[in-house]
Image (cartoon, rainbow, N blue to C red; front, side):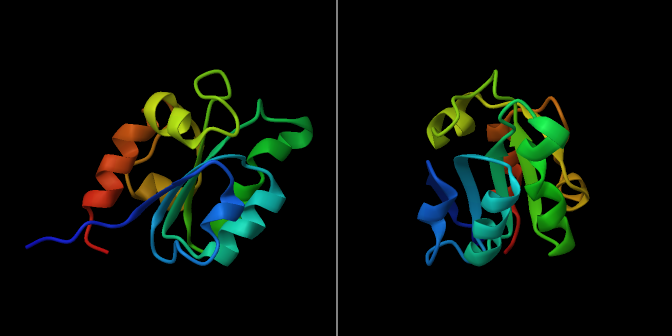
Amino acid sequence: MSTRRPLVVVDSITQALGGAQGAVIVCGSHGGINSGRFALLASPCAVVFNDAGGGLDAAGIAALGLLQDAAIAACTVAHTSARIGDAHSTLQMGRLTHCNATAAALGAHAGMTCGEWIELLVALEP
């Protein structure tokens, strides 16, 4: 019997605190540094954010580097493919734009759908 990695779908990364350790989180939050800090506190194996259009000096994807330093897989989806603040939109319609090295090692790449990557992840042994 195989086990599946838990999937946590929350509109704000703050909603994952206290209940997502080791899980895959799909959230509607932007991928800024503050969102990355909340993701660190949640301690997931992976997280998907919205790129929020990138932002000044790539502020909308800054969480990816922070999470890479902690060996947590992280990606963003295009703000033009999913509604910011809506995790179900991220999961159902989001297309990956940026992935850290840990996520890439787990099969993530720009252009794939969030749902495709999540299916790969949750099927992996925890």
